[in-house]
Image (cartoon, rainbow, N blue to C red; front, side, top):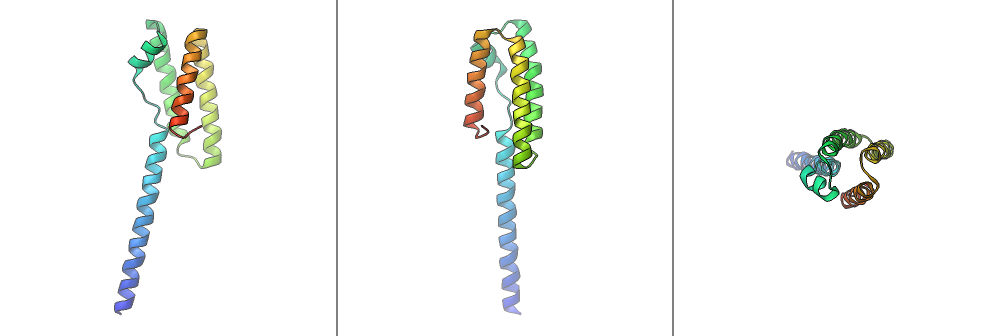
Length: 119
């Protein structure tokens, strides 16, 4: 009887540890896909006009939502969703930003995605 209780306790501990690690991995994944950042600093870095700031904010809200949505999928499907979100974001930003601003934005986005382990 004592052995059985110890076995049950050991199994429960292993299960709880696994569940805790799984939750931590999911949390880290979700945090990596959270694309919120300081819009004031971005507008200064890109030297955005007032109209551009408004447009970039709206584009970024959509991009952030798409990235958080992508984080919920499995690896293969997530990759497809991320690629679509990035392509859409870049197309919209290319429309709103001038050439110099777009190059800077592209650099900042690439660095952000690389630092978060997404691309």
